[in-house]
Image (cartoon, rainbow, N blue to C red):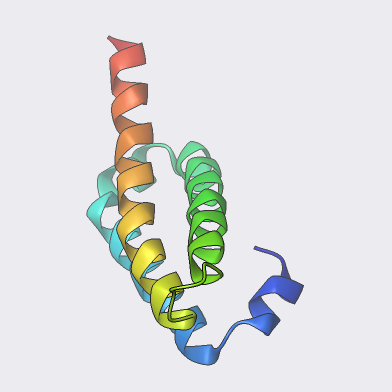
Length: 93
């Protein structure tokens, strides 16, 4: 995410994003260690997509703003990374 986008978010949302990101990275530590450049590229793409989806959800009429953003981001980022890693594994075999 851009620094402008991050500055527009609450500190709580930014902290939640960092915690979710750290948890996802920790879950995939082996991949990070084996292919760090590749993993960080994949992670950045997944993170950007999760943030876009969360931002869209946070602006729906029935959302709770930051709470919705955090919920969608926390649910989406791990799924996106898992799917991307699975797709890579399938492509290698």
